[in-house]
Length: 337
Figure 1 (cartoon, rainbow, N blue to C red):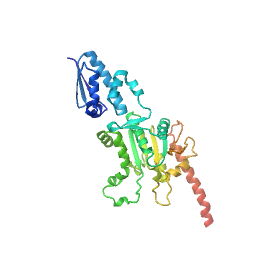
Figure 2: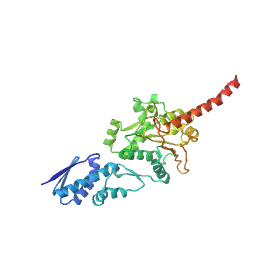
Figure 3: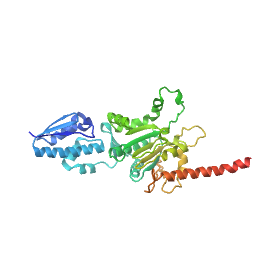
Figure 4: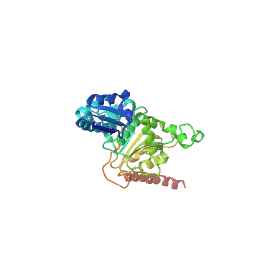
């Protein structure tokens, strides 16, 4: 009797088969003339040669869907098998960003979250500024996971400034990573919602997903990466400049922050607040704050430079600011003499 073995590639077998094998049972229902046996990442089908060919074609389409969206259901199985991959993709909700673990559907739930998702398609650098709980970081991470699944980027890099928020890092137990992990935990939590635990750990081990304090970004050029700077209100101007100039080819940057929750020491200015003032006059960069959520948008054109087309404009803006500041300070010094 003819048989074919399908090897599941790029998908998690348990997620593919579904809770209580619901997806696998639906596959079997749609191919009653075949004997289908699943073991681990292999699915063996036995039966008529023509039916086996059709089964292989449908399974390849279903794996492509699962790999792209990170999710299938009995309904999706039915759509892919009866109407094809294209029709199943068209049925996707426009508000859905990514499918997470345990059937979680991550959507743009507010008008301004939808606005952020729409602007992502046309912009490589976005500023999302708004209050805690507005979903700015979670939405940004969902966009990053989707970009990785769609192979738009090769890695995700999440970073935060290590602001001590009342505690001295030196007095905390553990090595540097253990001291800093509590500050980065919200980023881990979001990723754990969207990527299966085993795959996430593999991504971290391979460097496909990197979570690190902002200081670790110095000296790097971030190519083919989706990079998110969270809690940017707690950066200084020099730190934010350093971060923005890491932008490499085929990079997506999203900067998030809440200017009402600045934890910097007294007397230090927030880099996020200062960046708006410094960069708002740069051609091809525009800040637009939406009242409801405070999402800030940065827009630019398509010119290329060594790292990223915006880097030279960012550097020039900061240099101009330094020159103007130095010019203002000099007369005061001379007068004091």
